[in-house]
Image (cartoon, rainbow, N blue to C red; front, side, top):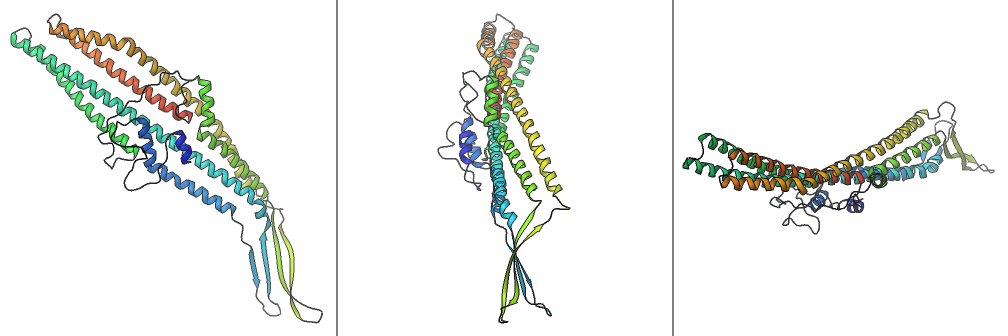
Amino acid sequence: MSSELATLAAPLGPGVTEAPSLPPGVTDTLPLDERTAVAVALWNSAALQSDMAQLGVSRADLAEAGALPNPTFSLLMPVGPRTLETSLLLPLFSLWQRPARVAAAKVQVEQVARGLVQNGLDVARDVRLAHSDWVRSEGRRVALEELAALWAHTRELVEARQAAGDASRVEVASLRSEAWLAEDAARRSRTDVTLARERLRLLMGVAQSPLFQTAPPLVPPRDARALRPLPDLIQLALAARPDVRAAELGIALAGGRLGWEKTRILQLMARLDTKPSTTASGEPKALWVPGAQLEVPIFNWNPGGIGRAEAELMRASARYVLLRQQVSNEVLTARELAVQASQSLEAFEASILPALTTAGEGARKAFDAGDIPYLQVLDALRRLADARLRALDLEADLRRALAQLDRGLGKQGVAHE
């Protein structure tokens, strides 16, 4: 299971310890990208380690299914005219049913292991989403601090004009309020960065350690390739998703249990009795009498066990159909969101943001020269600030959609052509 997690996301750590550690080759002195964050999270994930206990339970069930049944020994004490008698019962049908029980237990172990791999993919997705929020909050902090500096510069110019008699007290009061609001937004953005970083460190399992406390976020490079067509993505997801494979194994497991319950109608035991006897000369000896003991299925045909197994098979089949529908919907939704965010981001970066940046810089220069009133500067700065923040949100939406798409596909790095 660890090797499969390594191919799908990142390696799984050796176990939960008191002090979080780092996987081989990872240091906390470099900027933190989402791939490193996922590797550290899987290495220190207490949730995955707790889920590993369920795999241990399944392996114990496998060992129990393969265990041979113990024979039953009976002893009748000599009382009165009765002499000492013994008997030994060996359940033959249990030996015959053992391969089916072992096969079902092996399927259950693989099903649980697939579920753990899916849990690892969920952890990777959550970490990537948290890293995206951290990157966005850091970008908002930079943009809002730059905007606060622009407002402070504009306020200084208006105050200088007021001292020269070219600006009114109302204009100065309005600029001061805007500058204070911008400074307050910048302060709150710094708090948002701290909260986003700590949430990411919590998911990485290093919240109670000094790891990555000062590491800056590293924005992953954007993949310029186009996304695969939707039918190809759905086909990849249905073939690679561990939970889909687990559902298929659930159907096989339910079918195996149904066949096993049907064989439990008969119970056959080998019997070996020891009875006292005498030889032709009258000497006592022990007489070994082999035989068989069969439970005749007249009243009980195991209707409860068979009914439960049939219901479990129907439920497993319905779950499999529902899961395939959910996988298709998840892939479709994530792909559409990624395409929408990518198109909007390209439009902002290619035309909207450059135009507003040029307009904002021109308005500030014209205001510094005294050619336009401060209201036009206010409007240009607001539009530019909103555009920058919107571009950051779109970039974060794109990263979040790709994280959801990779989780929906069950693999990373296969969404693009």
